[in-house]
Each structure stands twice: as structure tokens, then as C-alpha cells.
Amino acid sequence: MMPGQGTLLVPDPAERENLSTFVGRAVRLDPAAVIRLRRRGDRYVSAWAATSFEVLAVRTVVGELGVDDVTAGGDVLLTGLRAPASDGRIDLGFSMDSAWRTALPPVTGFSHIDDIPARSLVELAERGVELAAEHGSGHGPPASLLEQTVLTVTGAGERAEVPMRVVFALTAMDFIPHGGDRPDARRIAPGEIVRVRASRTWLRLDARYGSVARRRGPALLAR
Image (cartoon, rainbow, N blue to C red; front, side, top):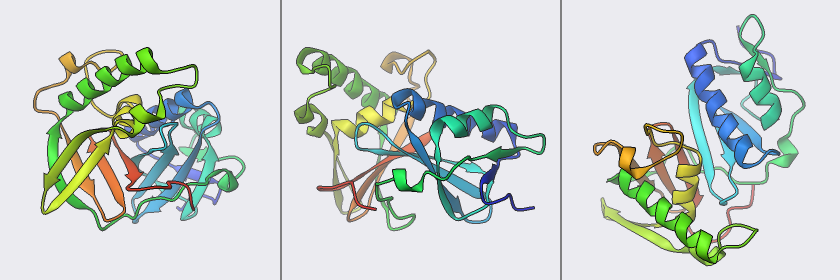
């Protein structure tokens, strides 16, 4: 049975835990975070969060959504995921559609550029944190550091530049598996990879536990 318009159904407890972890990280980064839920085919729901790095994060789980597209408060969604109704349904509360102001990338149209070692990205993030501590302020890392291209990936006739803000978002959302409380390059398996994909207008990094996406060029904002 399809859930009501204001509800989400994620029957598998493991999938519910996966989504709860994603939403929890988004809320930890921004207590006022909203989560945009979109139906993806007949069996999947994608959850999107806009991070403070002006980079989008997404995780897809097996589930059912009562509408094609709805935005929920992160805190409300997290509460529902941790204590769903007896039938597994999650109340999304009041619609927060007006709070979402960011365009989403298309589902298709991405080319696979190359795979890069996840350890390398975590090492870049670690160096970036050190630089941010030296040159940042109470408002976070300087814009010049966030915009700096830290990796250039080529393949399939494409060239993609990866800025530090995308690397920061990937590690802040904890999408790369590691053996500790936080990402540490020394604990990343050597064979763990992150897939770099790009379209004409978007860059996307796909890791084991989720993806981050950033519009190529100016302006992430625009619905």
C-alpha cells in the first residue's frame, strides 16, 4: 500500500538506519537542515541535503513516498526514522518545500570520468582542515580555500576539476567507510574508491555510503 502524502515508508530496518545516519549527519552540520525526498522509480527514495559547503549530498534507499517530491524538516524526519509507527511509516510533518532553494542535478546525463582512491580524498581533506585552522575564522574556512581546485580528473574525453568544498562535503557527510569515529586516511582500505562523474553542468562524486554534487560554474542556487 502506498503511504499517505505526508508519510514515508522504509520497511527494511537496515535501510531505515542508513537513512537515519544520513539525516543525522546533515542535522549535525546544520540543526535547521531540511531534507528533500524524491521518488526514484518504483522502489527507491532519494534523500537530498544542502550542506554548508554549497554542495549537495544524497543517499538513496529502498522505500515508498506518498508524493513524487517533498521537503521535510531534518529534525522531524530524524525523529520519525528513529521511532517509526508500528507499520513502519514515518510522519514527515509539515511540508518544508519553501525552505528548499537549491536546484537538483539531473538523474541521467553523467559520464564516468575516473575512479580515484578514497584515501587520497581523505588526505586532501585532512590537509585542508589544517590550512583552514591556520587561515580560517569563526565563520569557517576562507572562500579561497573552498574554491581551490585540489584534484583534476580526466577520462572519457572529459576533464573535471574538484574543488576543496566538494572534498570537505564528502568527508563531512562520512560517505567513505573507515574504521574509527571520524575519517582518517590511515584507516581507509587501499582498494576503496570514489567514482567521479560529470555532466555538462554538474560534478558528482559517488562513494560507498552516498554522493555529493556541485554545479560546475557559478550559482548553485536556483530551483
